[in-house]
Image (cartoon, rainbow, N blue to C red; front, side, top):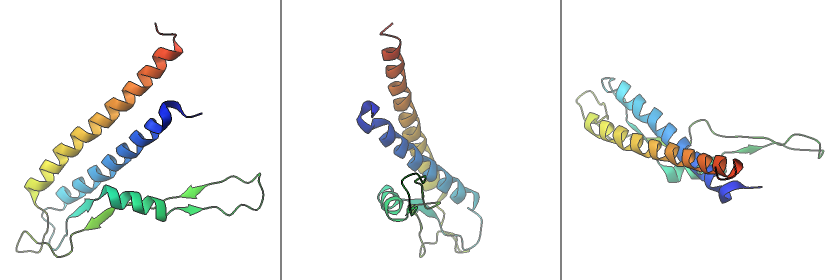
Length: 130
């Protein structure tokens, strides 16, 4: 039985995307002074493509075997290989990273608020509308 017709799983995917993007931005900011470091970014389209193509399914020889699959560790993350903002070859634009961090934080908070709203609706239904 699927509650909210898949909305929760879609919101979960959005939160996962925001989490990967947050980690990528934090890594860029942490390496702002590292010589020859190339900034990384996350593409939702690439993340979705990687998640669907890089999964490994278990080979089941019996119906009683547990089905599982594994996923790539950091899908959708790519580097800007030919970009350098500094003389030392570093490709991190600190202003861009801070703006991306703020935008991603707003996106993440909106996703979490939406999930919370869905669970509150479910709780209201369980309690019988009271």
